Image (cartoon, rainbow, N blue to C red; front, side, top):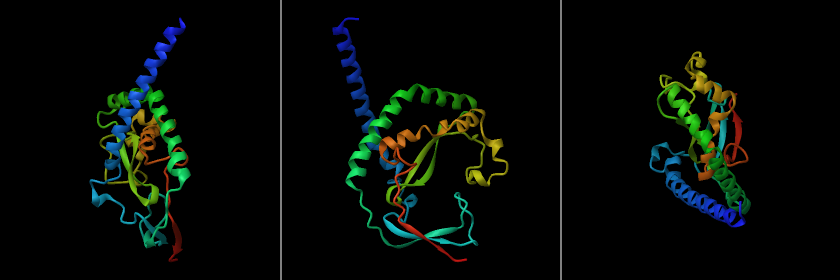
Length: 209
């Protein structure tokens, strides 16, 4: 292939990637508010921006982390995003997550189709997670449970939860492919490449036992 043809192909490729990045960034900017419950004030974390203490109490219901107790605010947090986290780390997050979305797009599309065929319904499901400075956000995953699964019962509290996992879901979970949509959470800024979420919990433990 002639050198001039290579330059033309590379120019078209660069323009395509650049356009895709701009469009994806605009979509992300629009979606970030929804993912952080900005339109659902009743779903936002009342402890956001607070210093908290975890009160261990064996009389309370066990949470998803297997501990009993609750968080209480003890004042305002003095947490501030540093230069590294705000610019350098965030820059890496954007570049790597966008690259992941582009490279893995065929796989993401194939998984979405397989989920639809195996058990018709939404391809994705969301979980409420605590992110930076205790801000709640919606974590995205590929749906691995059947549509008939009780929605008001945590998975670990279901009786024989294996019966609710789809065939495709079982494969996705065994290979951690159900977590691939979290690349989008990284791109829009809810999560980070290092660690599952960018947290500043700023809390201590107190036991009532």
